[in-house]
Amino acid sequence: MKKQVRLLVAALVLIGLLFIPKLFSMDYYMHMFVMSEIYTVLALSLALIVGFSGQVSMGHAAFYGIGAYVSALLSVNFGFSFWVTIWIAGIAAGVVSFMIGVLVLRLRGHFLAITTAFFGILVGLVFNNWTTLTNGPMGISGIPRPTPFHFAGFNMVVQTRAHYYYLGLAFAALVTFIVYRLINSRIGNALIAIRENEELARSIGIDAMAYKVFAFTVGGGLAGMAGSFYAHYILFISPVTFTVGESINILVMIIFGGMTTLFGPILGAVFLTVLPEFLRIAGSLRLVIYGVALVVFIIWMPLGVWGSLKSFWMGQRQASLQTARENPERL
Amino acid sequence: MLEARGLSISFGGLKAVESVDLSVGKGEIFSLIGPNGAGKTTLFNLLTGFLKPDRGEVLFMDQPILGRQPHEIAGMGLIRTFQKTNIFAEATVKESVAIGFHTQRQANIVDILVNGPNSRAEKRAVEEQTREILAFTGLLPWSDYLGKNLPYGKQRLLAIALALAAKPRLLLLDEPATGLNPVETKELIEIILSVRETYGITVLLIEHNMKLVISISDRIAVLNFGQKIAEGKPNEVAQNPAVVEAYLGRGFRNAS
Ligand SMILES: Nc1ncnc2c1ncn2[C@@H]1O[C@H](COP(=O)(O)OP(=O)(O)OP(=O)(O)O)[C@@H](O)[C@H]1O
Ligand SMILES: [Mg+2]
Image: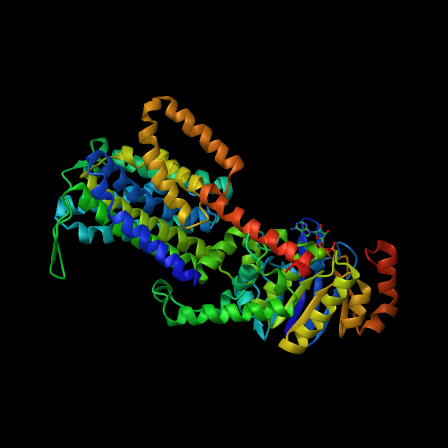
């Protein structure tokens, strides 16, 4: 019953999202929505690492960047189609993520945060200085759009923002679904156990290191795919997009939305992609508002917007259970 | 079932555990007692891979387990609880116990992503067995509570329920009765006894509550300053002069 209601809500939301390009035809809005989709994937993939497994990563944009560069270079230099390079980008970012994970995931807390930030800086340096490959700060331009796609009689071209919007929607929906299945499986259970209490998790037979590395690899791989999508959407990439600042931006999204839920990162990604555009009116005050809001969230709302709502609802239920226990006659 | 020989570890100059031999037979309830700081918890950490001994060897089900990771040892059926209350604070009781079934779940990644038959069957089985364990430990009415919102006594029980979910062949309990009131202690005794009756699990118990220890143990070993000073049936050990002296000399929490 509850499951059917959920499915129905999900279906309705998806149908509603399909109509967005009809409602907002302005390029400017559509661009915001496509970016929201990319950030949804980035936020969900980071939530898998930080929210569900409890391992703070400040280098997520590095995997986003590795995916973008791999995809761009393969299609610009060798003429590979986006439909091929997005997978290669994901795998490449995943492999790097795996190797970094094995190296750094024995660290905890601040040490892990700082090390992953350093990794992010290092990757940025490579993008900037390995000029023969990456063209340095000038970036890579002339990245081709996704080639027309023939599927079951359909001939899908990706040209307008609306096209990208639909493609991005499919991508974000698929990633949401994957993360949903993962967190509701034995794997998700193991990750949550590690986040909550690693010692206890190990004592009941959970290979903490292996699961942390798994989450890091999958998260990095998905971020790499998001990078590929970004490259073939903007058609130009340069190192400034994939900085530690961007990693923090993604981190803020999941802190804001609530990183231990499925919906929280999505909410954070969409809200914080759209909101700054409206805050532009506030000019340079924007950063101040942003900073203050972040501090407020970390201190008073560590579960994020969606997490807090969820926990409030659970608290209510437990309180009613409590009264039922204390006054059985009232049942 | 469990065979330890010459186990030793020292921290700096302190010999926390010194040449301890231990042999626990299948189906026994074996207790480990000794004054505060005698090395009991350290011995548990050595047996379960949380600490590496300086010397000695450990066989579990006739297999050497020294040098293995805690999760590998747990996977073989040697499950321990902790002296401090150790639970998943932000998970509900039901979720926590479900996590405990980890090593018994095999669904592969493809099956998980498509929610295939294995994955679904597994989830149903876990749900069912979780209920069974919650009923067994009397936690069923608390299923939907977060671990951190449970009263202290129930948190202690949750830690045991979680250990039981992990399918122990040998269950190591570190002072499970600490802080329990007399009613809760009696419940705990019932649970330990039926853990053996119902599930055929062997129990190795650290406990300061002598009444509890004497009433349920088949055999007792006494540690003092890291060394085993006595071993035998409860009444033999209680009359052993070395044991009496160890306790008189060092003071003994909950000695009643
Ligand atoms: N990781 C460690 N590092 C340094 N010293 C330790 C460590 N663990 C235990 N010790 C010391 O080893 C000795 C034995 O400690 P242990 O916790 O095993 O005692 P215990 O018998 O469990 O005592 P209690 O009844 O108080 O729980 C103590 O002196 C303790 O301070
Ligand atoms: Mg102890």
